[in-house]
Image (cartoon, rainbow, N blue to C red; front, side, top):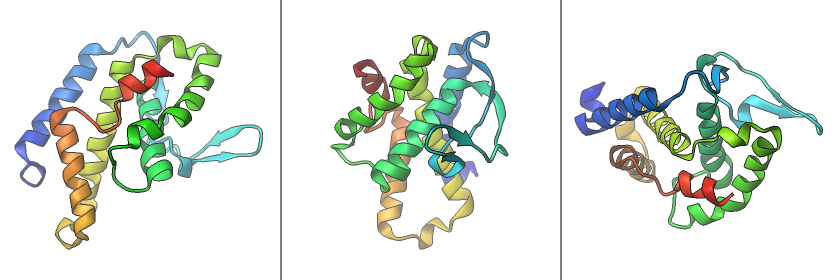
Length: 171
């Protein structure tokens, strides 16, 4: 798989995972997490959100689930395509609403913007690898391949069009 993903991409993912392992405090906010929180895996009954599809549950940081929600909400709901230059500014209002709930429960006091940003990039890497494992990339439309190239560059440069750390600090 490394030959298809590229040495720089794989090295960047390994560095990202090592940084997360070193930075995480396993005594704080660590436990069973959903692993794939998205709009497709929840139902809102008008009062409460209900999560389902727990086949990706794992032992990890709740920050990972937050980053997954952020990433998937941007790409599956707000954007439904690859990032553009204005994406960062457009994400401020919905992110503020999202984080208001975490701060209201007290969890927001332990949000670490840097770690959420790293988990956000890790989610992008996971999605990128998933596409390469499940799709015939060579037969995809050029626009999709261009999007994959943006994802690869994001992971390799450890940066993103959406500056999650800056968004979190503004909310």
